[in-house]
Structures are given as C-alpha cells and as structure tokens.
Length: 250
Ligand code: NDP
Image 1 (spheres, rainbow, N blue to C red):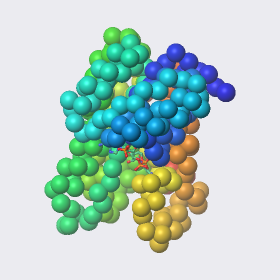
Image 2 (cartoon, rainbow, N blue to C red; image 1 turned 180 degrees about the vertical axis):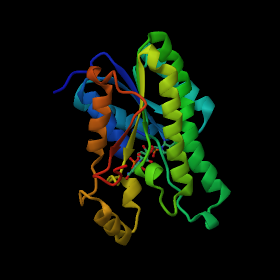
Image 3 (spheres, rainbow, N blue to C red; image 1 turned 45 degrees about the horizontal axis):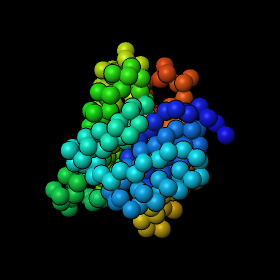
Image 4 (cartoon, helix red, strand yellow; image 1 turned 135 degrees about the vertical axis):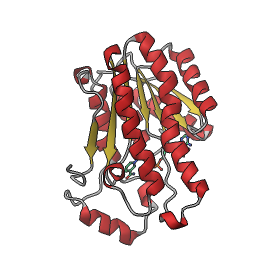
C-alpha cells in the first residue's frame, strides 16, 4: 500500500458517492486523514466510518451545502480545529440541471453556478488562508470535459465548469510562490450516479464518441488526484489535466 500521504489532512467535497468517494478512498489508502463533505450528515458519517475502518485512517464527516459560504467557512474551521491544518483540498461536489438554454430556468442556472462554481470559491478562500500560513498546500478542482468542448443542454454546467478553470489558473498564480499548487482535473464520461441518470440511448452515443470506446471509472480520476498530491508533483500548478479517454485533445 502507498503511504505517501501519511500525516497529511485532506478535505474532499462531494465525498459520499461517485468520484468524490473514490478520491477519498484513494487518499486514505495513501495514509491521509480525511474530511468527508456532503449535504447529508448520515451519509457522510456512514462513508467516513467505512473508509476509516477499511484504511485505518481518521475520517471526519461534515454536513455542508457547498453553495453556502457560511457553511463552507464553518466546515473549514471545524477541519482546522480537528486536525490543526489542511494540506489537501479537493473541490469535487457538483450537480447537473440540464436543459437547452431557451428552456433553462433561472433557478437551475443559479443552482448549478452556486454549487459547482461558488462552492469552489467558498472552500478555496478559507483553505488558501490556512495553506498560506503553513506554506504548503494542494488544491484540486474537478471541472469537466464539457468546460473545454461545450455541450448542448449544459450551458449552466459548462459555464460553471469553465469558470473553475479561470478561477484555478488565477489562484495558482496567487499561491505558487507559497508552495501551494492549484490544478484542475477535467473528467470525461465517468460511471457514477450522475451519468447513470442519462437515458441508455444517450449513453451509448456518448460511448461511441469516446476514442477509448469506454466509460471511465471514478478510480481513474482518484488516481490523478493522488498523483497531484504526491511530493514529486510540486512543480505542477495551474494545469488542466484531462482524464477522458481522449474526448478532448486540444
Ligand atoms: P455524483 O452525483 O455521483 O455525486 C455528487 C457528490 O456531490 C455527492 O457526494 C453529493 O453529496 C455531493 N454534492 C452535491 N451537491 C452538493 C452540495 N450542494 N454540497 C455538498 N455536496 C454536494 O457526481 P459524480 O461523482 O459523477 O461527480 C463528481 C464531480 O465530477 C462533479 O463536480 C461533476 O460535475 C464532475 N464530473 C463528473 C463527470 C461524470 O461523468 N460523472 C464528468 C465530468 C465531471 P450528497 O448526495 O451526500 O449531498
């Protein structure tokens, strides 16, 4: 088992399921202590207990709506109180509210922007403060291939995910001299509840459009996160790493 992150503390948003849970498990496998963020305390508690037992690491559940600035600040504070530091922040929580623009409700625009983009601001700001004091940190923000290519029916989602890229590049420039790396992962089509909800016909069409001709696994995103958290990755910042079976080759 890789123990490269023993002694490090990682907060992962949206860690109750899918990609976030795979990231939490991978970082726990590497020895990191965890903060597990999701909207529901019971789900967070169950996942934290399972991971803690499986990998013999500490894992603390935090119920928090990432779209709410005060809740995010309180969560970060609680993480710092519990562990005394935050080494790794993974902003993974995300939702979709798909619709063609002409039918896209303002509510669905706001929900996606607030959760997927403002949520990243909400956690990066207090985390950056703590990391600057410690002169160490790794921030990894989960975007999407859709940010790079666009997708009909996802104007809100693509805008939020593209926003993450501009935000992360700017923050990477602000923090690079403090030994804090900020990078983005742009997953392609990954097998989770989010994609499970798509109609079978659309999934088949999508699969056909992927050069690798298969849907990705959450573990493949988690592996990239672990790589970016490794000591040897300290010179990588402000980058967008596509993990998408070749969907985007710009
Ligand atoms: P899932 O729908 O499977 O899981 C979403 C996670 O986000 C859950 O843990 C959920 O927690 C949490 N979450 C949702 N809203 C909030 C909120 N307001 N506050 C806190 N937590 C929240 O998603 P995936 O695993 O598929 O996606 C993870 C990330 O990867 C997302 O940002 C997504 O946009 C991105 N992505 C996914 C792709 C895919 O193909 N699956 C492709 C490209 C990007 P809970 O239910 O407990 O509240």
